[in-house]
Image (cartoon, rainbow over all chains, first blue to last red; front, side, top):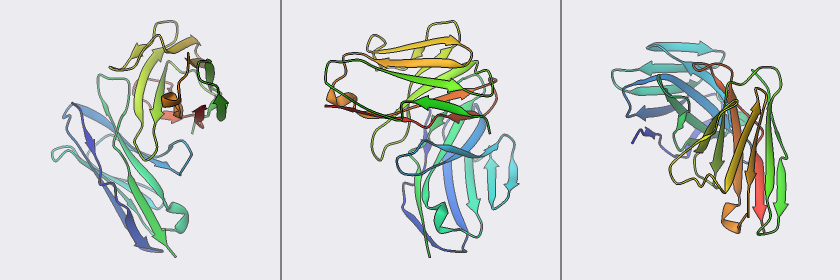
Length: 111
Length: 115
């Protein structure tokens, strides 16, 4: 069973703080990693993709990947109330087609 | 990012009837499309993977005769829920990818309610 684990939360952070979202995966053959944001009642929206170890920054978002530890994280700097959503971690095996999703972490940014 | 359009966004149907959901890639050719189902407060569960011109590959536990998938062109895939029952009520989301290693983009989702 290829598993993607996330803490369901809710994770509550004050406006302006850094939100840290974590994800672990079980399949060592995983090669592609994605973070999606999903607002209630809406479909997921791609935020970041990361394929190699280290950090990848895009605006207020930083994805971090450590394949040795099978760990991927998402940092959101200067968190805004509009960032309040569920964040889904998704992992793809190199030989596979589909993404394997975690259950998501609910983030609440309080004004 | 690429645009994937899903229609309808919301549908209510009577038990026993069939419902068709369309998924279109608007600005790219989707070699592979995926259909997911999401129950409240649950994650996305992959139902099937479809490649243009070939039969869909269904995940374990998903009835292929109940959830008919047609990927007739590189820009269109359809999911038909046949003989719908109330337990089929869910949020159905399609996803499309242009290349095997590329990012997958999601349609807006379809909220199906079977009464």
